[in-house]
Image (cartoon, rainbow, N blue to C red; front, side, top):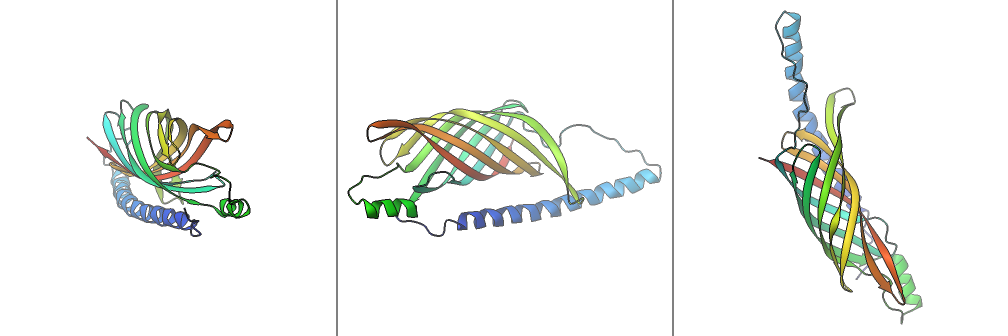
Length: 227
């Protein structure tokens, strides 16, 4: 494995993706609020307007398809990036079931290179993930909205996930459990930008010790809701 000195490009890709999404969102929201202003003008002239108090973006009985890109944020020896996807069926607005699979690519860090140069006879310090999958339960207790620069209203929700799965590394296959949280930023009724932070934990043998290895992953996805 070679050290990837351009690890910072991950953040650049994510920043560009978010920028494009927010630009599209602002265009969509601007068109919506133009209609709202027109309806307010009608109200000033005596027209009747029906107000509906309910969430605009609903998930109940819908399937969410989310391609993801992500990277590790805590391993001092291995840089990990991964791509994959998740299918989530929302039983209600509050609870959903998620199945996900990811394929990973890795490179060693400068610290690992330095240790290997100083101790060339030493075995690899840490395992490197090659793929992992999980079956999770997702709980979404928070749905809200906020005003962005006083120009448009951004709808979002916050979810918490936990579940079981397996991680395949260059050493062996490992039973894995995970937990984390995520935020969806809604723009269209079928699309949402998805941020997630998760900890995938599995046991790993290092010399005579068995430890719980924590893989902290930052994930960015674009969710499509169907049905």
